[in-house]
Length: 88
Image 1: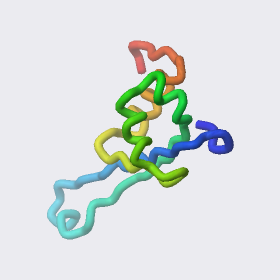
Image 2: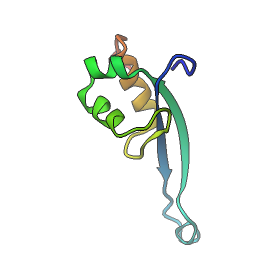
Image 3: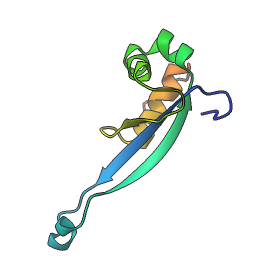
């Protein structure tokens, strides 16, 4: 997650929903988290993430809304050669 050497950035937006009636009237809130990566590594180890990068222009964030930030962090860790334990 090195911002200085990265050439692609992912913005992971986790949307929060509430079941209460008053919250239904309000817009959904979201939490954004930025993750920095390298196209070359993604090209070699993750065809799906690499394909998302093909549509990105420079350091314009690639927005992903259907995954939790901690899950995406584990995914990038694994792509970069990290091992994921059963507890994670």
